[in-house]
Length: 459
Ligand code: URA
Image: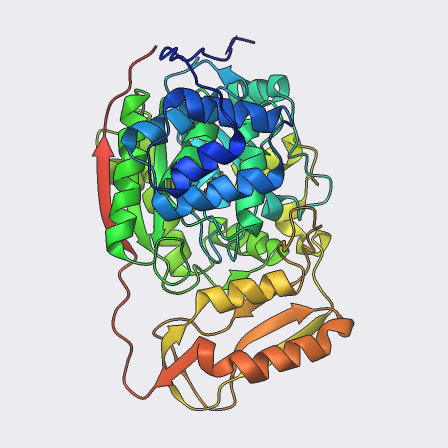
């Protein structure tokens, strides 16, 4: 396997005597950190000289004071070379990454569709963060699925099969792996430089020529408004260009959950349904847009629109579904999952949330639903928590749909011992989560903006 090893900082400044507290204070006071200081801090953290509490303080300082372009690139580079970096061996290697949302499960649809059109998809994905679920946590709902491949196995799957999905190991961007887990539990996720460095360090290590980024905006996303989503789009695109990679970035709506299912097993089922030509329309549209972008960046379609046409064809023909099943089988999962949902753990009790009045949905608050999933054990409160893949929520009614008083808006899947927790959630949070009005809801625009920057150069 060809790998590049850690790059030495070319800056080679004379470092004055550094201490964790002095660098934390420097960032706390709004000053810029040099490339060497960033590298020193991360190296010390990885070698155990800097403790989690000091890294947490640094993350909070970055969260509050930000980082400029140069610092963000230095942080990305340090995190990238904290592990091994695979070489690009095939010009059709393209990955997709989302900045995270509630019910955001497009990877399981996008990756097989793009692969069925000839893209090589090296997906190294993240775990749940804050109120948002993580692709790796979701795929691990599938019994025996191996998301912890070695890099040799990863490359073998990528180049012989064309499709691989795994979590971060200690080999790939270990600095991100550890910082990501800390950010999740220290309220330091919603930071443009931290998100950029986290995503780019993992993605650049995979040996891809380009990336499709799904930048979520709205109540359920880390970027709450279009202005901050645009800043994140710019930051990801510029960092991609700095590392000579192609980037297609789209800002997509996360004002309500994507699709109807929220929760690990339930989301896997929903994706299989989409691959069978059923499933929610919003999830299908965003997935086709992103997968089409991958086909285009890989040079397998002349335009993004043509890429979308190609992936629509393989969705309709069932080829995408069969690639999904193949991926599960290659990674040790059951070889009949697509026809046997009962293989997945699903919590035994199903409690409805009933509509208090008739009308149309003007609000379905994603954060509250995402946080309740965490409360039920479907996400983590502390980084060492184990996930319960079986719990979740399925929306029976979605944005724009009409409902009558007393009809179920959603079902909560939970365990019997959680019944009081579920009932008090419904009682206390209903008015916060749902707004039903007599007038039809405004139309929801799913894909708000797309930018494409071609910078690929084989280095
Ligand atoms: N996804 C990531 O991989 N990292 C972040 O910081 C946010 C979303």
